[in-house]
Every structure is written in structure tokens, then in C-alpha cells.
Image (cartoon, rainbow, N blue to C red; front, side, top):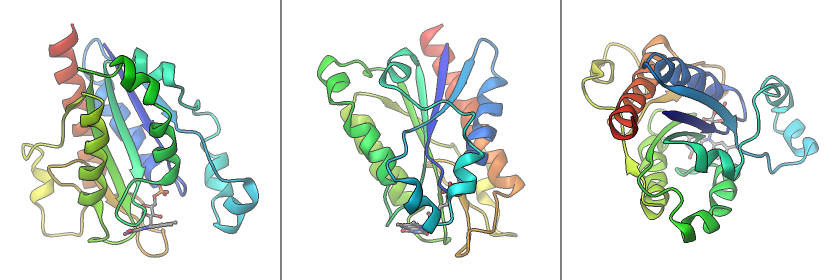
Length: 203
Ligand SMILES: Cc1cc2nc3c(=O)[nH]c(=O)nc-3n(C[C@H](O)[C@H](O)[C@H](O)COP(=O)(O)O)c2cc1C
């Protein structure tokens, strides 16, 4: 049973969350888990101006996603930073290249799930995940979120991401806040949950 984590991360927050998702999915027996990053669309000059060159280099060892990766997976967990309450352009562009897969129904019946990151606490995490789900539904995927059995999302003693839609982290206005242990636990839980469901469906 193959689980793919397909993500984009400009400043490393989603990358860190993706590693935790991988850990969670990998804890399920029989799960073959892979991570890939969707292709960059911005030239290095622009990334440099955005202060993202170093974090991009730090992810260089992660292979770039291909359409074949999507076809081969039983479950795909997508990670995207929030951009104006939506997925980032890099992810949108990658998904917009899946028209041929849609035409063949190549993703129909696969499990799909989404996690995200935003600068601010109420800056659109839920809208990013829920609007992402529309694309997955058009592709015929079975959507899985982060159930309330992950009780860490009920916490109010500390600022935290995480909702029934999916795991999330809050990067802060300056991007300096990295995912908290609770947010990483949510990501692990989501990875495990998706892999368990995919295992039941595809084994
Ligand atoms: C063009 C642009 C739009 C953004 N829009 C939002 C937004 O709507 N809400 C928000 O809280 N943060 C927003 N952010 C901040 C990003 O969500 C934040 O940098 C990201 O979550 C960090 O994740 P990463 O390190 O994986 O790239 C935006 C950032 C950029 C560059």
C-alpha cells in the first residue's frame, strides 16, 4: 500500500510537517511512504528576494513530484502553505497539469488528504484545506481529514493549528515559529490515519 506525501514549502514549515506526516504513515504496517515536492515555478532571483533560497536548498534531496507518482499511489497526502486563503500557486500549477489523469479517471478511488500552514492563526487554514478538497473531489478521491480522536486539536492552553479538516501549523508573521510538538503530533496522526484507511481499502 503506497502513500505519497506531495507538498510545497517555501520557508520549511510544510516540509517539517511533511516529515511528521511521513513518520505517522510509516508507522502503519505494510505502508510504503514517499515524500515528493511539487515543481517550483519561481526563478531563483525571485526566491532570493523572498528570502527562500536557503530553505529551498535544504529540501534539494527530496525528489520532485511527477504525475506517475500520483498514479502509483494508493493514498496522497498534500501539504501546501496558505496563499490568500488558498493553496499556493506551485501546487495549483501541478494539479492543473493533472487534466489527463482526470480524463482517464486515474485518481478515482484513491485516498486524499491535506495539511497546511499559514502565517496567522485565522489567516485561512480551513479555507485552504476545504477549497483544496474540491479539486480532490473532482478527481474522484476519497477525502480523509483529522478526526477529533486526535484530541490535541481541542487544546486551548496554547496557540495551535489543527482542525478536523487536517493538520496545520502557524508560522507567525515573520515566519519564525516552527511547528509545535502538538502540531507535529497532529501531522503524525493524520499520516497514520490515512495509511490505516488506505490499508483497509487496498490490502
Ligand atoms: C503571497 C503570499 C500569500 C500569503 N497568504 C497568506 C494568508 O492568506 N494567510 C496567512 O495567514 N498567511 C499567508 N501567507 C504566509 C504563508 O502562509 C506562510 O509563509 C507559510 O505558511 C509558511 O509555510 P512554508 O514555510 O512551508 O512555506 C502568505 C504568504 C505569501 C508569500
